[in-house]
Length: 437
Image 1 (spheres, one colour):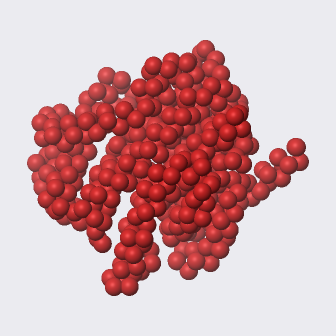
Image 2 (image 1 turned 135 degrees about the vertical axis):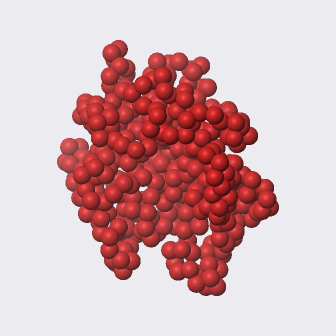
Image 3 (image 1 turned 30 degrees about the horizontal axis):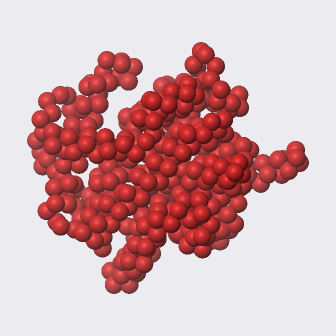
């Protein structure tokens, strides 16, 4: 058994090291090098071996053509293993995800042949849609996941935090997942009364170290990290405290109804905001500043963008995916008009509507909601695997907060980790339930 574990670890970390070495090369070298590496990446994904999942997280991080390749293989694997995945998720979710594929791939063909946009530019508009499919790939590889691989995933993710500070590769989206994960681990470890989570001591030490690292070295935007970590922490805390009433109010589908009402309220009341528009006026070290800062982020920052995107959707009558995503105008809270903006909507539902039209946009939003709410099943089981609990709570917190205030949960450089881990955790507990029957 020990020899098997040693061999597994050797394989895992060998490919993690290779993938880490390739990250800066993907970012700074030309497309030719990426094409040369494509067969290696294809092998990692196609093998369906969970030992390669930690390495693939880094392969995705650069957001290049390699990321698109991995997502396309996830689509193909979903179709090939339709019956196997359907047995765990049911047919409706799979059908809803797969049926639009021919239409969307045909549009990519039109972009490439008639609009002469090149391979990458032709597939980039599909990226949010493709970002749904790591969920199914995660379910597919979940059967052979074990604690050894879960720990390898966590250790590998920790390197992201170090890389973004000490390596010349710039900021990467995976840093959000890393910080949220280790902040949750750190704060759970700080609770005086011992909680029965059962994660390894060295993982807890990394969490405590990350708390210190976050408050000392993190600069700039922290809103989505702080609130993702907060929601993730409380989901995990309520589970461990067996407070089912509070836990159910957080993880049941009704939370998306509350969020929808909140977005409508913000869009409707954006220009009634009278508070400060300067984020430097708020401090993370002052709890008293939090309510005002939340109002600023909602009404003073996100509100104008959401307002502009929503009204552009109503004015354009875009029901089906456009070949090119339209720009939009919005009125900044300061009073200035921003014309022909091509920034993202900073809300996953609004961005899906903007990118794929009202019909497909609502469809993909519904699929996203169904995938995330399936994580509630993880928290209905007692004596659950501690790593599944931990990662499920983090995926859920990020899906809610980042999905509410951003869109990168489904972007190529992030979706393989966020949606893939959702599928892994859900598939893992489905397999456990089948074993217990």
